[in-house]
Image (cartoon, rainbow, N blue to C red):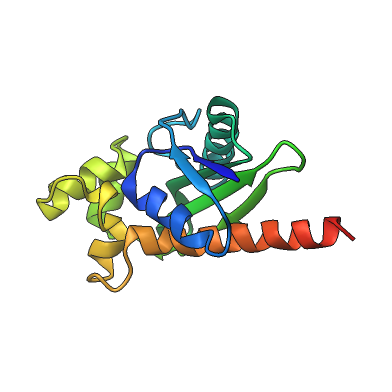
Length: 173
């Protein structure tokens, strides 16, 4: 089975590879467009980005499964939440979609995001670290390392792969 990941981000690649345990799989990662803004600003936009990445990965990588993972933020009456969504697609079924952990971002971060900046860049400036989005992510910084970005996306991937396995099991009956 060829699984094509719609990103070259090492945290997303690690999440996909971890979640397909028990499958005989070849993994390929491609830099594909999400088709949404660099900083998705709603659940809907973040989901659309994940689906777009999964579909583009499947098509461009000519695989059996395409996976898209997208991080974003979502405005609520409580403040701006970090959100993350994933999509798994095949040529035989509708996209499978799943979301993961959420938490309120600090006001000094949300002000900059609302002003149009991208979370990854804001986090590099805030943490004085390079490539935060390719390492621990905002979640790693704001949970004091208790949860990192790869783990956050791995949870989403388990939800996707579990639904895929369920679909495979019951579509064969």
